[in-house]
Length: 110
Image (cartoon, rainbow, N blue to C red; front, side):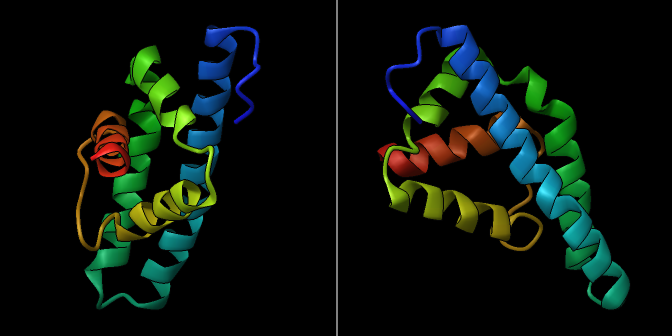
């Protein structure tokens, strides 16, 4: 994320859109994997988690979105975000977007 964005509200909106996009890109993939492997409930659970995350993304406070966006200054942060997304429905099941964002921030900041 460019640090020279003039408006915090605009930056938060952009980060929110990027977050939603990342969820919406994985949602159909998990649904198709659930259909491909009907005996493995993890893909369906992951798809349901992504559905909940997308539905609750608007509830993440602006200050958390700002912190979330600030953590994408380095490649390894984006890489960790991708890893966390892959873990949804398999290693953990966040109840909402706030929990996902909080875990990412905590993971990246210690």
